[in-house]
Length: 435
Image (cartoon, helix red, strand yellow):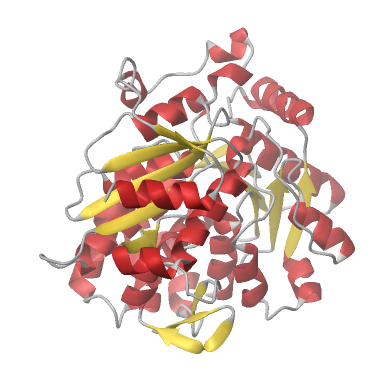
């Protein structure tokens, strides 16, 4: 399988090159040259397969020529070694818990898979691999824990000052070893712009072997398809075949993976892009005009993205056909007040505590149910453990949240992070000085 740039389909590279280069010099994003169709027999009997078996089938369809079968099986089994249960709240409403990995966020799927893929391809004696990542909250922690101690790698995490939760910041800044953190006096979009500028800088690329751990990296996108297929399998075991997914959406990598799964043969009725007030995509679907804007800080900080990078991948999957896309993707937006009300509603109705991102996905799922005659199963994705957002919960709800042992172990650790502004030259000098 070769991978092309969304800006130039004649530019074809191997999976290995796409992973390590992360983003083509033409500033497009890598996509598989062919979207493989999974066998009908596999889809028809998917309920018989485990998560790791499903993950291998999907990964093999995309990468069978790039990684030996036995190595790919072992890699997938190690990367996806935690559960992703679709918990029934009622007969037709399910919450897909994606926070059972080491960083308590859905991004563990992508980060663990990517770190193991890079470790597989890295050879002894090769130039040190510098992994750059911008985070609005959960990506950084997942990448940090995914790459911690991986030989011949060094991770630099950029995060917006004052815009991540205390637990998220602890995950970013207290690990040490091969993990470095920079606190940027700006927004997530500023962090993302610095990372992209570094990849486009010829001088830096001559000095460093740069790659990205953000969802712009194709090896982050592929493993996120696994849990969509697995969720469908879980519902099918309950006799439910018509499925809708409601996805908290910020940089649009998560729903992009779902749409890739759809294109590979997953029989999904509809995807719901659930956003906060950073509503670039909902506005586009309503007006046909794609207009980015500076991100606004909200309680759902991982979704505070004004210029979602992965939207170009989604448009590419649909050949730029907006009308066809709109038949598959619906979008709703919610503000902080509505988000808090949603958290309260879920607790009162189901005795279930959600993070703000998950609450937004629930609100969108509930609205879709009320606006349509859909009678199948609606799965809303829970992308992070509620303990990562302690400041937004009233005392009575906060008291119900069980704090995982891994979070308690972070308490008291010393923060290690440098502070920078949003200018690229300052970031470039920092990288060069730390070589």
